[in-house]
Each structure stands twice: as structure tokens, then as C-alpha cells.
Image (cartoon, rainbow, N blue to C red; front, side, top):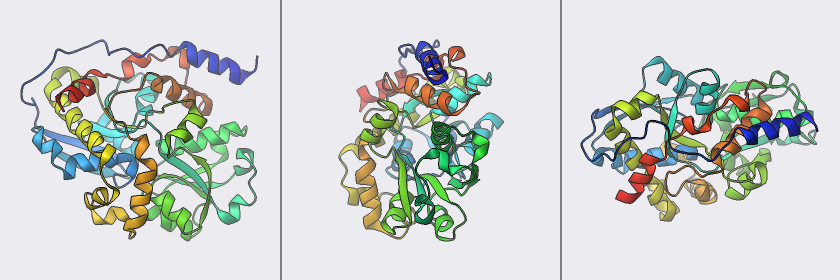
Length: 345
């Protein structure tokens, strides 16, 4: 048995059927205990976080009784730091951070899903791509990620590992999201990018990059991960769920409403519902990008049964520091708030 096979077996052994977190709350119907909520996010303009923007612009947070202050950081790792440092109550970020933090002995819990597919892609500048036959050939290359330590960075690490490379064999440069990503490629500051749309689609349309890894559709996630891959979600420290369950419920309800609206909304309506700057100067391309990633948006905010296990396997393949046998996936997620939100909508 190879080391990879042994690791995958360990991952599967550590990935039981997801159950509710051990502090299940009773159904709440009262007003939010905490109405002012500070939410941190990294790269809000990306389609990866579209449900968050829709919940904001459509007034779903306000209708749920919340005044949500959204602080946008360069990447998911920065927003996680805000949560752990106490300057944010909740994060819109990658689910994988709940696993990483548990590995470090610090619990955070996800409670409403935005993306059931990773929704990211790795692209190389065309002149670079011509020299790359596989991930083993990217040694020493510079990749533009949202921020070091974010999921965009982890995707590059995972791809590199498939070529026998270590994380230190490539260079991750934080370039944020949106227009700064396009500029980094146009100026030749990076050899490739690991990013979300609409930036990836715009670079493709300009014929500036060749896509090497693509998870912007559910088919892409099925091909790469074998099923659903939990991506953007709302997560917080356990006390938010325990001490302010009504506030947690209000947050989940707003996101589920946004998810549901996006399932059938016309692309033109979506484009009208986000800040003009998010379109990166090309409304038609934004609408095209949204249409392509729509099926990766969670329809109900709930975690798919195979999601946590797929995420854990992905992390373990790209990071030797992740020890699957010691991870309790059931402690990383609570489905009850999203389930209740679906019943109310």
C-alpha cells in the first residue's frame, strides 16, 4: 500500500456521517440577542461570496433584525485572524478553516453554507503554461492568491503535491481579489493565479491564461473531489451559536434566502444587485461567469453529507500537518440553523 493510499484510508476512517454539533439548541423564535454583528470576509467582490452580497443588498440581514457591518479583508486567512482576535463576530470564509483550526486545538463552527463547490480555478500565463505538462513543472513559480493561507493558496498547494512538490516549492503572493488579480497577470507579476470568478473568466476572455485546474462547476468538483466540496460558509466561535442562537439563526436565514434567490435569478438581475465595481468593467462577462458557477451555490445552506470528508481528504493530501485520525468532523459544522431557515422561507 502506498503512502497516498494509507493517508486516504486514514481520512475515510476519520470522516463519519456528519451529525449535529454536541450543543444542539432548541428552536428559537425570539428576536436576535445581538443585533449589531461584525462580519469579516476576504475578497467580497468574488462570486465565491455572492450570497453574502445579495443578503446585504436585498436587505435580508435587516429583515432578519440585524445590523451587519461587513469588513472586507485581502483574503480568508485575514478574516479568520479578525475572528480569533475578537474584532469580528462571524466570518464568511472557506469551510476548511474549521478543520485547520481544530487541528490547532481551537474550535470554530460553520452553520450555513454558501458554496457547495469550491468555485476556484488555477490558471497559468500562456507563456508559462506552454512549459508546464503537469504540477511537477511548477516548482519555483509565483502564484497570485487572495492571501497566503487562504483556500486559493491551499488549492495551489494541493495541485503541487500531486506533482510531488512541497508547499515551499512554490511562492504564494497575496494579490487580493477582483481587478488586482487581472493586473497581476497583465503586469507579469505572477506566473499564475488561483482565484475565483469573475477575475478568472475575464483573464480567460482576454486570452491571458490557460486553465489548469477548474472547480467552478459541480462537474469540476465531482471530477476533482469525487462529490460536493464545501466552500464559502458562515463560521464563528462556538459561543456565538451557544449564547446567541437567535442571532445565529438570523444570519443563517438571511444567507439561505440569498442562496434561494440566486437559484432562479436572471443573470442581469444579479449583476444589477451587486456594486458596479464588482463587474470589473464588463457586465456581460460578469453575467457569463455567474451563469457558469450558479450550480455550485448551495440551494439550502445545508452541508452535503459527503462534504466534510471530501474537504478533509483535500487538506490532508496537500498538507502533511493535517492528521485526519484526530479530526472530529461533526464538531466543525451545525446544520440545524440552515435547516430551520429553509422551513421558514
